[in-house]
Length: 466
Ligand code: SF4
Ligand code: SF4
Image (cartoon, rainbow, N blue to C red; front, side):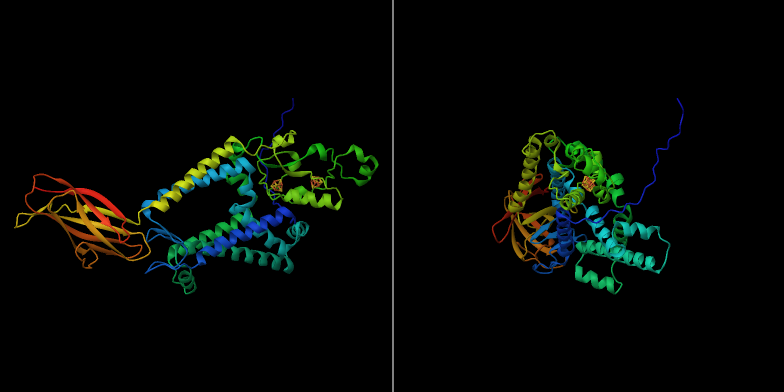
């Protein structure tokens, strides 16, 4: 047996996907516009809120540690909601994958959406597939320079806008725009825009299909979520094969051949550069471009038979696809429970929070009239959109009174009423005094905060005594 060194390394070859019109292309354009509208529209949307609260509909306020989502305000202590939302997103991805394969990759993934835009810009400046290949292999001249410069400038513009609109989610968009224009925007904002610009330009302009094939972990494990009823895009060899491109041979011996005329249209439109006729491949992002291409070819030849289409392994074996399956239902139930839990939390969460910290120095104060005083720092969080006057009362401690001394920010309190602005956390210093007779040793005491609407929040702590 002869020994031969075979290199397993294969150079990356630049792909020139042909622009293909059709149903799936229109669907993907619709989604591109929808995502852009959401991504770029949300931070520009104004939303009236009371007091000094920001009037941006969606805002991640990192310094204030709050997330504003229209009328909702998410506080740091509610970060567990983010964890639940991430679990919901993961289950939703499993649900979509089990049902319709890599539909997320083909229609919704950032990489696909931005690459689609970049490819379109490339087509506008450099023409379709053949013209782009010709331009790339031709020597540099004025024409090539102008086309390449124009394309890269528009790519850069899209990349910069991508970065800008991303940081608008973290600060008031009009203010930050002014700061960018007069050069006074904060350093982290500049750095974030720069990073997003570079990564968008590199990933959508150059890396493209390599992100889907080599970098994205999802493409590697999504196969494990497929079953025989999962929707896939497949070529039907029983109709298409044996393929024959030569029209003369087909005309002479037509009945011997399948319907695939081996025109390669489905290959030249593929953004990941595969030939779907070779069977299921993990590189396929189910974008549907090959379906559009083959439909156009077949329509031109007046053959209304789809050689490539959405199907399932079960359907290819001659049985109907089972959409209602245990896995699908289980994912749907888990998502419903988690989302229901989040909604229940929002509809029932108390509109305020109270935390109480006993001041340890001094442990207690023995007053001249025989009473014992403890000092506390009380923090009240007003989660509503209006100024609230809360009543603070004590429970569980006999002969005890509570007095609000002053806010730690210098405002005078008035008796047991705690006034807190919308969306504010206000600290108060509070004196609790117990009159004789006083039992020895520490006692439990409860602070009860009542809002103007009658909602209450109770926190227990200790009252120190000699
Ligand atoms: S094989 Fe078809 S569906 Fe899959 S990525 Fe290529 S063009 Fe898209
Ligand atoms: S586009 Fe259709 S006819 Fe042309 S090669 Fe592909 S499967 Fe065959």
